[in-house]
Length: 248
Image (cartoon, rainbow, N blue to C red; front, side):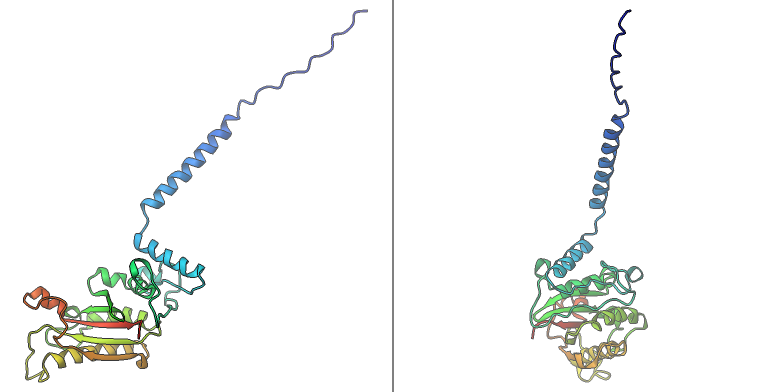
């Protein structure tokens, strides 16, 4: 009887679909790559810098919150409530942020960025802190200490920020060197600058800033920041500075 030949084991068929795994991996990596490119291309440098400062303070044991109570419906760099969240006060020293700026000054720039962009206020350094400088031509009529009605929303935003810190605040009045009408202003530019600073102080107080942290002073035309020889220079010198005291 003839012996049967043993069956040979069938060779496994090659998996013709393995290329799909490599293809899927490549597509995934490309998608992630383009997402990263898009995020880098659309980053907001100001918010990225502020966010960097926030996380730096948090991881170092601080309590730093960046907020914007009115811009874009109340959303800041770190999402908070529409009324803003507590701001960290900075007294007795300047906790440095980027470029030598204090963290509190960075917070002010973030909170008031809409007013800064509109040219209504400036956030500038001072000897003992920083100032939220009001362009008085937008807040007062010429030779007047009566605040314009359309200046109130801007002062409300400033009050929202100032009211959430514990620093002392000094409102400084400044004018150009043109003497006002002596009949209405017998005290000259000293009186005009002083009454403007008091008008701003009373408005901040009405909007909830504690009165014990507020004071007003007048410098008249003695501290110009530009030359009074030109109309543009005089417009810079007409200002009310809301000084946030960080060093005493």
